[in-house]
Length: 219
Image 1 (tube, rainbow, N blue to C red):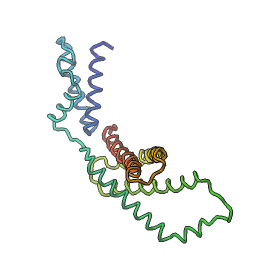
Image 2 (spheres, helix red, strand yellow):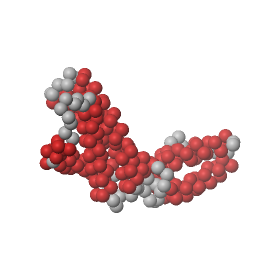
Image 3 (cartoon, rainbow, N blue to C red):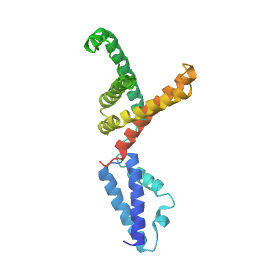
Image 4 (cartoon, one colour):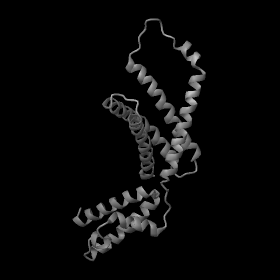
């Protein structure tokens, strides 16, 4: 492969990444790439490099090309998705708490352990936090999937939320526990706010990443 060919391939790869980020459909990306390659090869035949034609910002050129071409794009809608996911998580958490409180005696009877049995604290904490995470993830994913069902690629976003949220919560819980330990597990507003901020940042960060992943994935 010639140096010119390598340069063209590099520019096209950069352009494709930008188009994916913009949510341009695969068929339109292929069409744009074909036209751009033809232009770059024609310019190369005239002794011009890709930089001579596109300038120093190939990603910006690709963005402008997509806008000028009027290709269909899937809007990110990060704010809407984060808002719906957050609301769904809160509703699910409240509903789960109400269910557990209402069926408290049933749960006690169902999981009544023999006298003297000691459950390791790590196991009890794992079951508790695991249950909370499962409820929150289910609420967030279902709310996004149902309430925003008409949003392009929302099904892919919900699927990727299912993959990313549990490990994000796991890491956030460990980080929040470490922060709490550093503050001697104080129940002050500052300490509680710090721990809550860590968990919320993980939740919204993983949700936003899931949306970005769904837009940049091939398809």
